[in-house]
Image (cartoon, rainbow, N blue to C red):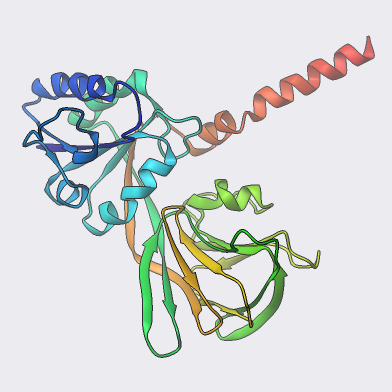
Length: 297
């Protein structure tokens, strides 16, 4: 058994996390590999390797960090069919939901076969200029079309199954999976969607016309975005990691990917428990009740 570790290189004292994990794995006779950017030693030990090698060689991938750290490896892990455990060292983790204090317990549960699979559907994005494919990739959360630093409105044509649905004038557009519904799409006014549903969410960013509202579409549909004439930079960003400048000769097609990401979770972890805790719904409700009661007095 080979366990690969991916984390945020700027986390202070991450070498202690590696040491603790290495000690825990010894009792299971498991080998540890870590991403090379996590190495703090002047030399490069043999168990610190590039991420693409780590994903291929590992039987299990453990991500220490926030959701952004996990998104960096999501496509590679899904393509190589490697399960992922997310340990939260960030501020808000829907994907890396398990706290660091429980990582030894979670590892024990993994080796004892107690963790459950939570398979998340990826979406595929294809950018072409009408003749050639410029970029094809898979994403777990979202693909975002937005303007550069200029305060300009983008004119977008939205096609669903070859039907022109809308001519959008907005700051941008988010095409999100159900997993990504709690990310940028939520901040832009999109709905929260249960991650197991076969859907794509189309959320305009600050639309000029208030009738342009978020759409929830079957992932069996093909969604195409064309950009009208522009004279300033427009960018497409995939899962917040990679950005590509496009022009009015480009079109973006989003469809269901053939890949799924296998997240491993504790059987006690339920999606709506995580949602309630991360969004602090219960806490907010309690504060509202307290404020209301105090006002009545």
